[in-house]
Length: 148
Image: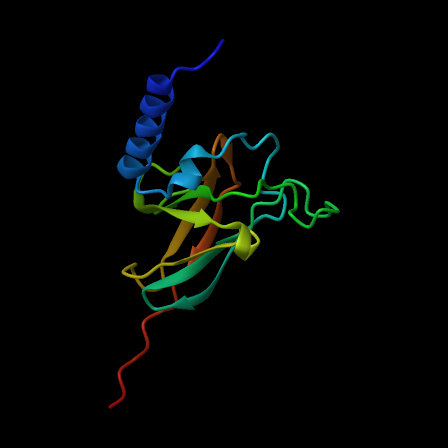
């Protein structure tokens, strides 16, 4: 089936609108090919606790030892959503957002959280397309006593 010029222009406009609506770069919206395998083989982590937050990390890599150096990831930006909840079942989500896993950063994702309660445990997880990471807990540091 041959595509008309009008069909091509309308398709391009629809992709541009999708990029504008999601706030993602056009390359992230227009890139073909879904993730075919679980990208969370390297796990997820938290660290660098502060009194009101901590850092979340993941690196999507369905094939960490792939010879092409891309760890099984496509050579495109992959949106990775994240959630932080006050409970293990994620009934009380306190923060959520989207980070972009970029090929030039080996698809590594770092999220710096703040504004959380000191000394409290929170639970976090990531999602890339249809794949959901395991959930883990991270704790904010207790508030430091003020010097007298």
